[in-house]
Image (tube, rainbow, N blue to C red; front, side, top):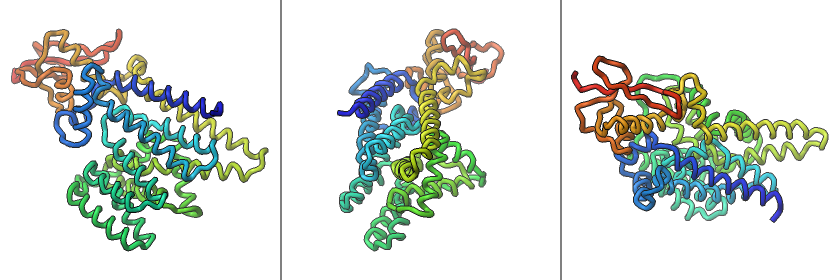
Length: 397
């Protein structure tokens, strides 16, 4: 094994250890609580199985199945990259970018359907590119029973089949598209509002800003002059579709991002092709660009993983991106210290999070953020800092 591969192996091991540590200590989120108590789907099933199998692993138990799925996704992405990238350095560059993407890291430590969707999609692509199309289409059909994002993927597959003029693929993808629409529907609701800039910001957060900038350029460059294979076509279609829909309404970015991210090997291939055609003396700017891009990516990912100290630094800790995870947990601890094990909360997700920590809603008291007469003050604290004050009052008092 070369020193380079040894270094990557060490980094991969450290990556998994850190993810386990983060998943172990991160309290249950609003969406996770809703999935755990309210929904009946594969994500909810896996959460309950993890809780039952590993009852003593704090918050890791409900997320353990998704960490395993993350490892599967890493393996699948490595083999997918290997189809396009024959050079070892380019291959591991692609792998390391995927490994460090904030969006991928988030999907690894949270209980969501994103990792499952990504695994099915990558498996489909590997089979498809190896010309095992029957198995590929059988596999991708499973997504119909997993997640609503199947509507988006089947639409992209349908447009790809139309572009390739493959009658069988057109028929099959149209059946899948029709079935997914009948099951999940198409969400077009509310007054039209432009969320285009917000969507760009979300993609920048998922990729890291500079990676997304170069990724967007790569997709556009291939559109003008390049190999428009199935990965590019689906990534391009889904990206454009998400931006178009965002002109009207806010989009669930988790339904689109998995099908966009997988085109990273194409971006890396374009970069190394541009790098190699230049003389050594003209490659310095590419080295500099790569260093800057990787540095920003690493900083973003480290800030995501080691986020807790920011509660002590931020002027308004309530605006911390992880506040919806920690505040209900710290609130539950504070309530229990006051001997309160039952209380009502107006926000359903907050109530479900408190329920996970053993605080029921069957109570004549409610929790408010505004002070009132005869209210009991409950302080949400982290270390020695008072982050927020809540107030317990009697209902209709």
